[in-house]
Image: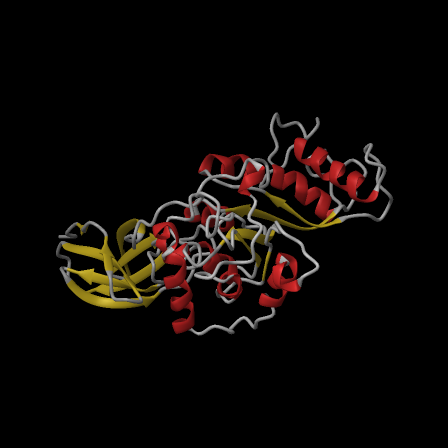
Length: 353
């Protein structure tokens, strides 16, 4: 059996440390390998194939199972017969779908993933945003998070909001008079959960004022809390003026706050006590973070649950004891920081009479 993932790993080691012909010196390793550009749930399925029950005889083995072997020095997949340790950390990247990236993290019951590279810039909240969705989940999972697309792949400046594919797409200026580059860098680096950023360089100059490398480095010297909320909103306002705010062509458009996902209700008698069990999965945040979930019974609020990022596939759970045996209708409501709400359909609880 052979693996494209393992081929990529060994090719990188050979090109960086070895002879470029497939050979690499003993003791060499990659500090982190990222599975790049995750877009669909089908891709998540493929990546996780074989991770829970690795089988060397399987027709297909996903990248995560293979990479885990080369991180741990095991041969559970049959793809690491020398039991080499060639990786320190495993991660993934994405800039399109926050829900898909959240799914990638939530499925990781073995804590294989250590890092994430994610698009985050000052127009993030105008789209299906990363900062209040997948970045908060990654942070709660204690993952290292790297920012990218700080300048929206150049669309904040001279480039059209489309993929870069020709030389004239390279931005060679340092910011602009209407939108300096410094606040954009500071915005990304002060987003809660972000630890560092990668930024493409299109212009290097001996003049520090004209050198993107120098200016980007200087702008990055900011503490994680270096911008307060008001200052971050001011940067967003400046960025929103560029191309009508439609710079993040690589990201799902803003969809607003959603209701709690996959709600369900059940009941049982326990020691003659009627116990109601409600479960649900995370809602997705709009341009403000989710604050709470409200529980309604027969259109009256009976409980309020503080939202926490959902880091696994285990649902949120609410239980209550009800003294009667009558039918009831329950509803789950997402509430964000601004007070906006999104509710589920009624969950009908049948009578136990």
